[in-house]
Image (tube, rainbow, N blue to C red; front, side, top):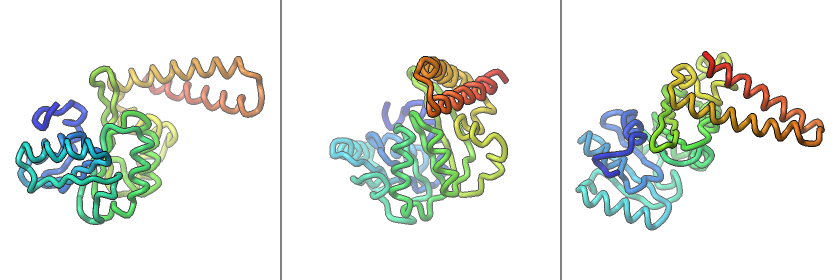
Length: 236
């Protein structure tokens, strides 16, 4: 992978960045995504954020190598602390777990002023991101799920807005599966959730073998209901 030939998941992330955007890529991984965006769109500019010295230096070297130092600013810092409020239009965070992504957003909420779009690519835990978006007034406008190198990735795109219509029905299920993804139900979606259902069934068997008490019984019922709901979606 390099600035001209990204992984499929990062190409899909890039496709959601509007032309001419000022982008902050947090956890930038050699600044490949910012370099790709700026090479594809001469009106784009970017900030590449890295928290550790090694990746920070790699990102700086990459930006210098492709001659983009005037359009890409590589900064060292934790999460959104590399930004000033109102400095960018779009924030991308890719290749992390959902919990870490929401922690980054939580800790830098004041830096989201002026940001009109979030493009988030969790490796796991996409539901925690959907819950965070709901809580803080972001409207999910698109999602993708894809498989690459035998791993499954999700991409969530959000703008500021009211999502009450999106989650008017089956809120819990949509937050778990993704309202757009459960409608499309592509092969990556089916593969992911078949695997999850099989894992839940193994856990359910363990619950059934455990010493019965009120807490175990409640968890067993919740897990069983979750299995039934997801299997129903998979059968559509």
